[in-house]
Amino acid sequence: MHYSNEKFDTHPPSNCWDTYWKWYNLLNPNANPWEPGRRNLYRGIIKLFGKRDDWTFLDASCGVGESTELLASKALDVDACDSSSVAIEHAKLRLTCAEFTGKVFEAKWEALPAVAPRKYDVILNDALSWIVGVEAFQTSLIGFRRILKPGGLLAFIGATNKQPEPGFGMQLLREAWERLERERFKLVESRFESGLSVSHIVTRELGLDFIDENHLYLITEQGVPRLEFTTIRKPYTWDWPKLVTLFREAGFTKIDCVEIEIGGLNVILNIARTSNESLR
Ligand SMILES: C[S@@+](CC[C@H](N)C(=O)[O-])C[C@H]1O[C@@H](n2cnc3c(N)ncnc32)[C@H](O)[C@@H]1O
Image 1: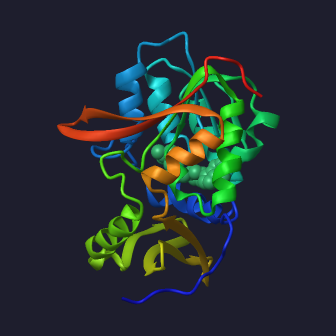
Image 2: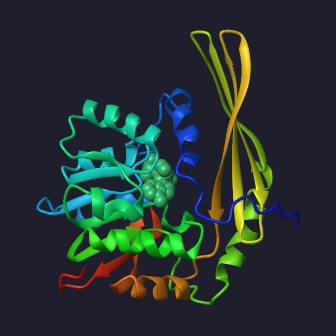
């Protein structure tokens, strides 16, 4: 196996997603938020809590707002946030078109208590397990806990209590790397539109406990070529025992795995609950 060098040892800068979202709409003009097999966290939450029209929801990793649109389409009272300013710009445009009434705002998870406009019954996060580093994980969890109502829920995906052995993430890393054999260098999409041509290439590198996805954009604008690129790291470090400890330390009282059937498949959602008492 080939391991890449360490490129960063803390949480990647929020702008690593900016380049990705900058080209996303152009490269995916027909993106379907309900594409089968995707967004199982959101489908699962709709299935579990879709009738709770008196609850408040926060899509805390909203990207360009496709996942928020799913929740809003079921008449849920939802706000949306993300740390990528580019994502938020696109999400605001998208959600305005969808006659959305919630708030869309830029925020890092650890900064949420200072900027969130209200408290929530449920926070959704489809990128929690991509956090790099224990300290970033701890501060993010505290950020979420402080904007949840007493008894509120943080819903995410990732580890499961069916594989509780410490180090199980390393097995998942090896399996993912084998599964991705044909995707280690891939031309994802090419588009040409009014004098602008963009080709999106993804290369993947294996690290000791992560896979780096390098996104390369070969751009020709007005005949002038250039390259933009970004790296999005996917760590495989958050085993179930580590999660249980981190959530307990951050003031959550319970963390469960809920198995739910979506599109004929059994999907596991992780749901962490805050205390019914108000904590600071
Ligand atoms: C997988 S993408 C979200 C996709 C979106 N939920 C959807 O279904 O289309 C993960 C998002 O999490 C955001 N993110 C990552 N780390 C963050 C942090 N510490 N604070 C806030 N947002 C963060 C990224 O900017 C990115 O837009």
